[in-house]
Length: 258
Image (tube, rainbow, N blue to C red; front, side, top):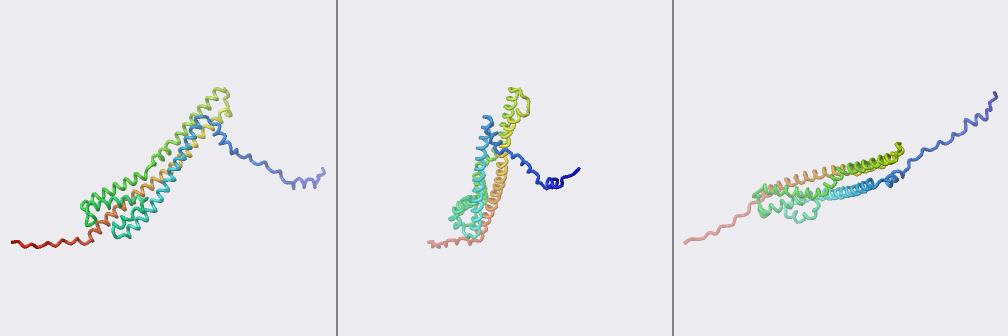
């Protein structure tokens, strides 16, 4: 048998044919399933979208307000520790208004002036402590506004998505029983469309849970900072009152009796 060597060499040196590229996943499959969703699943998706927008709005607004409060609080603490008189600090306290420390300072300052008119030791130190606790509680309550909505969205979003999935599966099996074709191809599209709502519920709930936990931790930090500042302010008032010289006693006029 005579081999054709040039033809054989050409065969081995020839490039292999390009392999067929893998079929790309259809990027519009998700949009198509959403478009083909039933009225119940579509309503659930719209509800979850609104909940997601609302939760992200709350988180962004809280992060922004907490950042401003922290920055102003640091500035207020520096001004407080540099100041030598409470009246001077009270006149500029409004400049640091976003900070909850300002509310604590204002309550203690007002209560101290009601008791002593700005001179001497306070007659009722417990009243100053109660004023600080009241101001701290009111400030935290104001900072916690709309946080319950975030917790509610984080808790119920998966169940809303699960409700849409259950209703979608019920519709899919009902259609399967009506058609009488017990095949996977007949039921798979309906089930895949139904599972979208569960995924959407998780997409809404997970960021809400993370944001709620982060914001709650920040609120605890603000509460601790206000308690520490209240004690520091009370110590400063007591120390300043003890170091201040006592007021001069009025000279008694001596009247001669006859």
